[in-house]
Length: 126
Image 1 (spheres, rainbow, N blue to C red):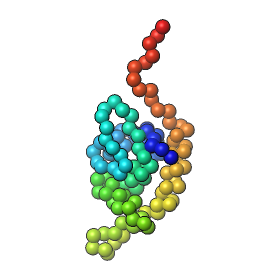
Image 2 (image 1 turned 60 degrees about the vertical axis):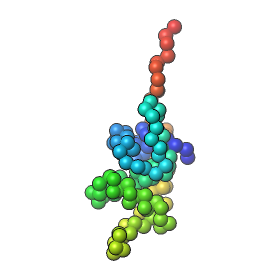
Image 3 (image 1 turned 180 degrees about the horizontal axis):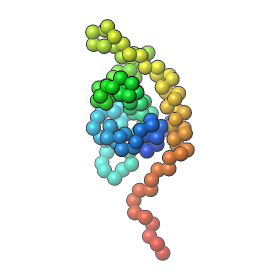
Image 4 (image 1 turned 180 degrees about the vertical axis):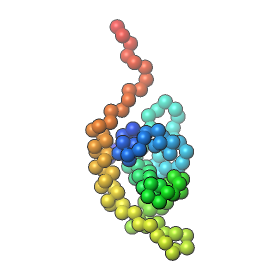
């Protein structure tokens, strides 16, 4: 799957588009490049996966978004999806195959339901 718009990604993630835009504007997200104003933002599947895991960590464990994004990056970078504590006494396991399957399903639904807004000036009337 190629990159999708922030509106489609937000729908699939179950959050408001404005919340996703705020995350993308303030924090580094894997595979997402900031561009100039006026261009529609597009997110890769890698970006959406990181944000999805971070949102789950925030909702389930009240972890702040910046920290959750770092932990999500660590989970995606490990083979088993395990995030170990610095001292090795604790670990969080992210079920990456299940997360990816769920995201694929929700993105497929979102692509059918979300219509990207038109950009630019309206066509001139004759």
